[in-house]
Amino acid sequence: MSTAATRVWAVLLTAALLCVGCTHPAKGLVTNSTDRARAQRIQQDPWLTRTPLRVRTAAGYAPGSNRQLSRRVTGRQESTRLDPRAAVLAEVHLALADGWRLVYARCLQTPSAPPTEKAGELAPRGQVAAVLQLGAGDLSRQAAAVVDATALSPAGAGSQPPIATVEVDGYVPHHADVSWPSSRAVDVATTCLTTSGYGSSGALPALPFTPIT
Image 1 (cartoon, rainbow, N blue to C red):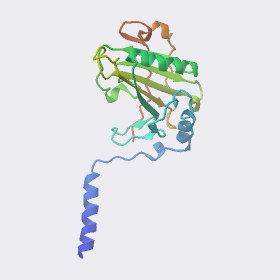
Image 2: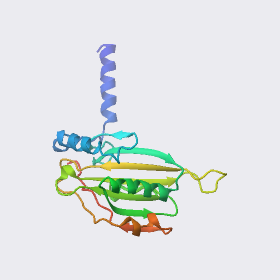
Image 3: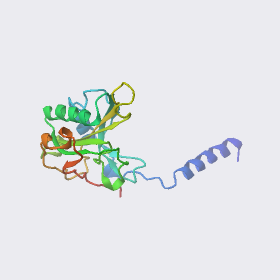
Image 4: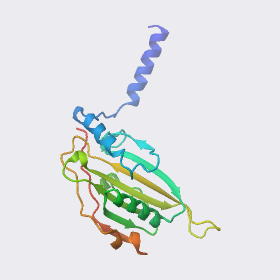
């Protein structure tokens, strides 16, 4: 065997070894035109896109996710001088004005640990968080969003107010989903977002779990 051929076989063997245990999406779960259309529609939402998006994709197979689908199609992040509670409340008011409904709010004294896989895609990660939903009935008209905010510097550190990061992620049904969870709306005035307390209000929607088979 020539030296060139030996090198080719070595490269192929290395690639094969690196892909041991690799998983690939089942044919029926590959992103299609329905997924792209749903993503494009929500990527035009005035609230979700009020600042430049750092994530703009379509629902589909998520490599490295234990063979799960990812329904996140938009994502944006920014820093603010507002405290986390005020930052999330500001986003919620903008969302409500845009036709979204608040279904869950949570306030913690300290940042939480990252959610586990079983917690689902809509599991809040931030110190203060809100989950909102949009639409009803037709799956192509529905969406969900998670707002997370966490303080990066404590209040009273020097002469500057605290800095917080705010993340807003949008989700839509995948074409393989036959249902989409719908939680009852909660009045923002009754949540921790407008009080000085801690805890949660409302019900956290659990997105469908669709494993790759």
